Image (cartoon, rainbow, N blue to C red; front, side, top):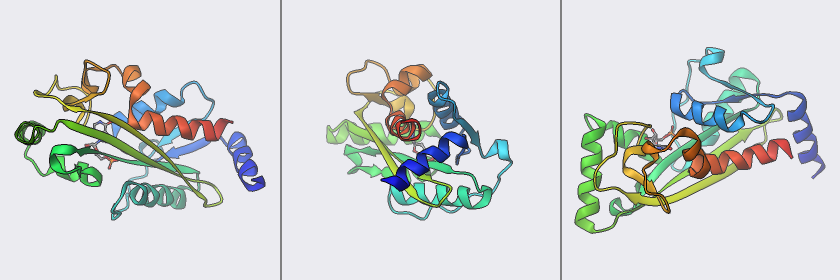
Length: 206
Ligand code: IMP
C-alpha cells in the first residue's frame, strides 16, 4: 500500500505521461478525457518516436503491456498503451485482439463491413462488444492494468463514414446511433476506452 501511495505521489510531481499510440482518433479521444486534469499526455509523434514493437500477444492485456513497456524503455517516461478490439457474436467473438489485422485484410473498410453484416444476418446474431485493456508502466517499471467494455449491436447498414475502425457498424446498447454518428464527447461517455481511461485517471489523481 505504501508503495502504491509513493507511486501516485510521483505522478503528481511528474505529470508528463506518454500515450503509446499513433492512432489519430485514439489520441484525440484520450487527450479529450484528460483535458480537465493537469496531467500532460504526450503522444509518440510529439516525441518523434517512430519505433513500434510487434504486437505478439494473444490477448488485449499482453499487447497493451508490450507497448507500454516498450514506450517506457525508450523514453524513460511513465507510459500507457491500450489494446482494443471488437468481439462479434456472429463471428464467434472474433476478430477480438486481431481487429486491426482483420479490417486490413479486406481491400477496403466497406467490404469488411459487408462481410460482418452478412454473417450477422445469416446467423441472426447481432450482438457485439468492444473491449479495451490499458497497461500503465510506471517509472519504477510496475505494470498496472485498467479495463473497459461496452456492449452493443451490429447495424444492418454502416452509418456515415466517420470515426475509425468499426465505429460505423456498432451501436451501443441504449443508443439510437452508431459510434461513428456520435460526437467525441458522446462517445467518450460510453466507450470501452473511456471506461478504462477513467479508471486510469482515478488511479493517477486520487
Ligand atoms: P489497437 O488497440 O490499436 O490494436 O486497435 C485494434 C483495432 O480495433 C483498431 O484498429 C480498430 O479497428 C478497432 N477498434 C478499437 N477501438 C475502436 C473504437 O473505439 N472504434 C472502432 N474501432 C475500434
